Length: 85
Image (cartoon, rainbow, N blue to C red; front, side, top):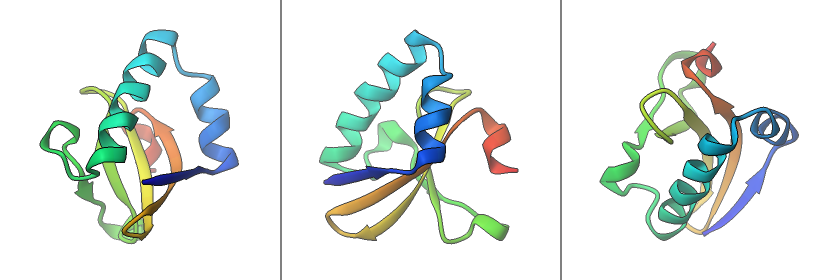
């Protein structure tokens, strides 16, 4: 799967602790193979974010993404649950 990163995602990713970045990279590899792998806990968002999806890095951190087609995704945001606001 081809992944594009928004400038907002890039800024937020830079601020993450190194340990979280390492886990995020591992999760991204899983995502590239299968975005709906059960280890990611992928789910559709609701409300004003209903066109987006989210998957878990760990229990605290998430990545919000958008599926463009079956081979392309955009990562829009990364962080704690506060990114849903």
